[in-house]
Length: 228
Image (cartoon, rainbow, N blue to C red; front, side):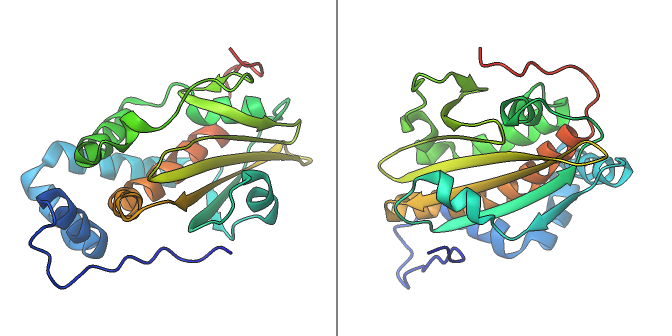
């Protein structure tokens, strides 16, 4: 069963590290946080602003959609604690879902890489990224993510950890204009630590998922359809 992520914070928060309290502030006070970033970290504010206006200027828009049933089924997770979905129409026709996935993760622009670095820096104290199993499962990789399953129309990548397991599902559907590309992230939380980590990265996840898919559906360069 998929449900909205809920995180309970105990009344005695003296044991919580500073980065977790900062994450709560970012998550609950996003508009105020942006205003603070504008004053204290103007370079970061420029990245966020550039991403926003870049999305507005791109011809092919990305929409937030309900999590596709096919994504839930393909994830293979025993239960799902968080899931989302984004969809966009590309002008080009992708050969298969793997090619579309490579378009999503291939060569992100500088400002997207900076946002990824910012996200990684904030959650680095959790140590989760270093412990997730990203080893090749025999089907190749998309960027750092091992391919878990792949068909012509959909592909699943992801990783497992004692704190959380996650899957990224990408599918394509042909249309008269090109390919409709859909991406869904699904997470199974295994511990309170994993719940805290997911809570901390949520604002960045939403922005990055939409931005990366927006770039993919507006690409016109060549992307290899094959695993490397």
